[in-house]
Image (tube, rainbow, N blue to C red):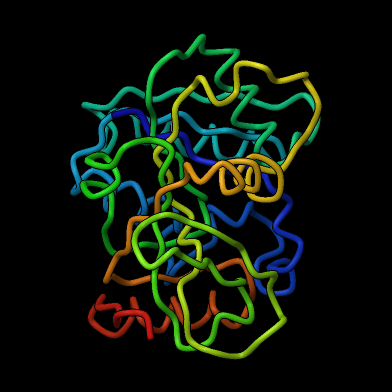
Length: 237
């Protein structure tokens, strides 16, 4: 299955720690984060990638081209540069239009590490989202379920410090969800997912796996320490 990778953000929060490269290329003990991601996605069976780019796109393209005869030798690689920032939903809708997609695909955030989940999401029915359980959901907001696997609400971030399920940033979507796009920027999370929840048609896929978002300096440095410590990441808690 094709994986669309959102990698066009400005990485504003991470700039105090990583100022000269896009956050997806942030060095992890000398290795670009994207290189670790690609190896991990390949290990999970993915071979077709589309990178959705904007800010510092040329650096990411140069990286991908440099690895086409190496780690990406047997892969199908494509990239799309947004003419203007389209937000998460707009970036995906733009890619669906440019690639003339009409089937299912996976989508992920370039700055989020998940220890697994690709196989589980591929086996789900679109639209579906991966969720992980954390001891404190305040930074991310909470995903609430109906007692089963149906998502019934999203609780905004920073509203409560408690354990719960969060959006893990990996999705199984269908191109038909974006067929009525009007060409304007929109948020996948605030706009499309909110509509899906109202219609009770967004499925959650719980994962028991590693999770970290390197988008802020503290977690970026924590990820570096984890990789340095024998390359083992603890399960989220």
